[in-house]
Length: 68
Length: 471
Image 1 (cartoon, chains in turn green, red):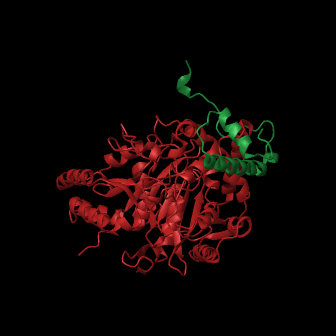
Image 2 (cartoon, rainbow over the protein chains, first blue to last red; image 1 turned 30 degrees about the vertical axis):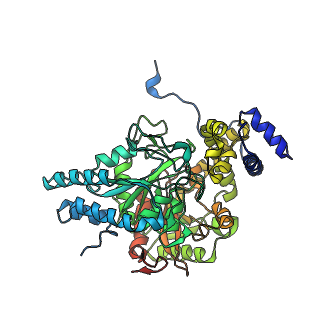
Image 3 (cartoon, rainbow over the protein chains, first blue to last red; image 1 turned 135 degrees about the vertical axis):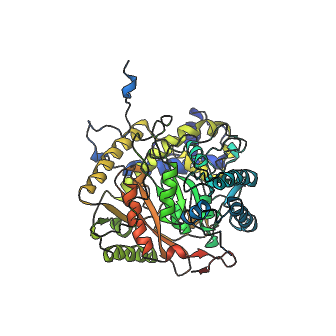
């Protein structure tokens, strides 16, 4: 999970781990802001609304014609 | 002399069918208008006069032989430049794809070509339908025809701008978090995000697979229904395509709203967010008018706007980053700053958060659709504010998230933005009308009844003094 208090160096390391090694400092600053924004969104996801049996909106299914 | 710039699709169709208007003359008139005025608005990335005249000449021959294909035969249209037209680049308004030549037509392009439409060109977008308005891309951002110093909304920015400016009577846009309805709201035109899957996404550059919708922008409700008639339909090659009957979207126009049950989602724009006072006044006046016309209006509530927004953005950024990760590794410098930052938000979203957002989505959609057991349509805000200045990054950032459109990408519901007046500074105001899945004809019925009871549709920007208007 993303650390709660990210630094620019940490974001640089995380970016490198997923192959994003060409980011300039300006891009890393953007990534830091964007990641913080995404984490803020996560905190307000109404997770208390879902129970273990609640399925995702899009689930794998086979069409009738796949019966073979 | 007939003013062809603001001819509606319905008016043009009748004139073309009865041979009182030549499709070639019609196309030439709009091409002239684009050449003269689009330098002020940048609605087009690429105008295609040769293709337009080829389509128009073909339509003219067919119409002269009495072979009328339908309401789009000989009618000009444009495509947001994330939609493929064979042989032309689909750039997504980005340096990343500036040489990306489309090999085949998108499904929606195929349908408009089959309907006999006259293709006028590719329209400006926010970069990859997410980053804009941006001044650091190979092409400038589109501007608002009501005042070129103002934002025209997006991401289907050129579609809204071109339609409002009288360059086209109809354009195709796409909508993942509000991108048809935003430019419709900002530019004072009509924009429909149909039910998820009603219009094929095949051949359209995806932003987020499970939230992307394709739909029409026009100047009138009837035209919008006509265009949806032309582009809707099951496509077995689009895995998200709805396998259900489509069409007949004009069938309920003119039936009025007497007895229809209208739910007002007021908390979106008064409590969850506080809309601009003029926007709120415009919406409330529209709600009162619907009641005066005979609708049964009552206030309803649904999940908070913030819950919908967090769900939408978690899914959107996750799916979008999956698409863009390779380019983010190899060419991060080739994105504009806005698209890069907005797309990067998906880089480190946890898999569990994405899955949970889709689980919440199902719950929200089920709960919202259940409201229609005793309601026909819902009404709420689209944008919280009139268009802000285009070159004020802080204002753009402030207004970007101040909207109530994303909930209906989450629920997949059909939702239309219609004009409800103008601010004191002459900028359009708008509301949304939302229905249960596949109820587009009913939404058009309500929107049309409102439109017919007002004069907004008769107002157009004046290209010489864009903040002024004439009736």
